[in-house]
Image 1 (cartoon, rainbow, N blue to C red):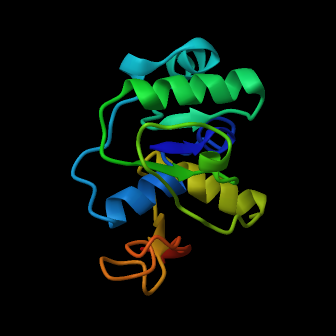
Image 2: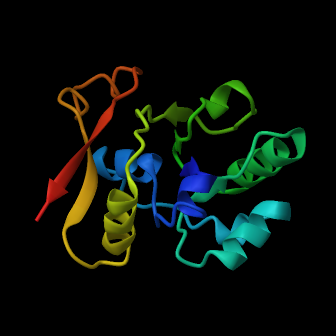
Length: 154
């Protein structure tokens, strides 16, 4: 699972769109990235203990090499990326890569505070939910990306 690094760190979210897509797609297990961590990503994971997915912190040659090294070191069936760009176009992976597409939206300070409270388990929950057609027989199963939408759940 590779999620957008800034969402997980500066944004304070414990998970990203890739995690949501994997869970909705029926993933039986999400791989802990810490045993495979190298370089700057190892430092990020040590600082942000609440992060459970592999954070893509940037796209420099060094950062892409770190992501590639970590992805290829783990044992998994598929890598799902929930990043703004399709990492499968930039790195070599021994595992199939599926890119979870999403549409980022900016929210005001009030919404950011709500999202932070949600991430800590306080107040209303805001979740990302796949759009229609993203299920077992939907576009993601046929090799096409599935989209997600925000749902507010009281």
